[in-house]
Image 1 (cartoon, rainbow, N blue to C red):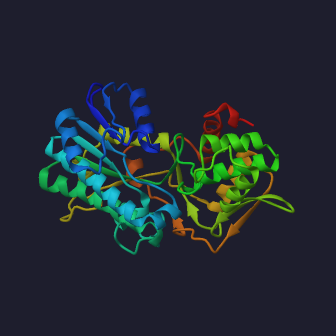
Image 2 (cartoon, rainbow, N blue to C red):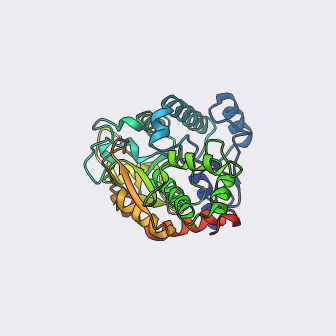
Image 3 (cartoon, rainbow, N blue to C red):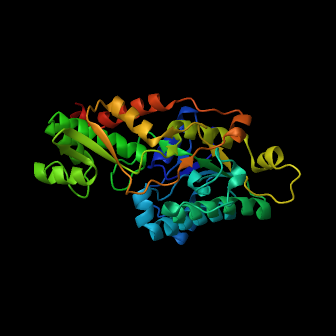
Length: 370
């Protein structure tokens, strides 16, 4: 990519897309194209066709997707598979039709089998049963990766796919109904700390800034307490406690989102599809699993993550685990050998990242500082 190349970032308002735009600008790219959902619905084939015809981007980062945590993935199964299939099919196909020089598609490590050997290598894809709670999303992402691969093999395009591990960072989703585990825990502990300090100005400000189930800071204290209890933040005779789904034993890997964005730009600048085939699949008759894992290669138990976030936030109360609730795949850690061999490694460790994220969270609204 050249500094003046026309680069389209699909999904620029999301966690990954916003980080991509930031990193591209830091690296001196000046012709970045974005479109909010209100102006371009990526599930609308005709709209996407017109967009590529009119704008003619040279490079595409496909970060647009419908995402969520265990609860959202399990409940909104049809929405997750339909919307993701439509978004990626439209963007990938019209990138091909309009001669995009290079495209990077972002998947997710949930594409790997539920009981995949650890750490998960790229070649483990489709070697076992997927995790049920996020199977529709995973199937969509597998289709997107295979679509990039197939267009390269049939049409000679230069579309690469990356599979990032669990991400966190600025612009994350903190809605307790739909968010992933790390931002959900951070917000729970933030609210729990305010509750144990009887700091209702912080609680009401938080809900006004990020309403939960349509409830904001204007609601009565009783209604707010009932809502918080529903999401596992409650007062007890012994103080305030936070309930966490599952046993706390599953292990997860987490990557600071700006590190992911840096890795994506690194790959777009330096690595082509042919390089991936040459470096990792040389001599094979069947070309498959050409995607690249992006992560730290390090994981942590959910229980340990909770204790870390509790410490960073400053909550003094208790933590309880609910084994009756789903907790997803037991272990999910990526093998990042391919990425390391290409010359990229992460820079932000988990504790530093959590501290940065909490600082960002409370800085969004001065009233949240407490």
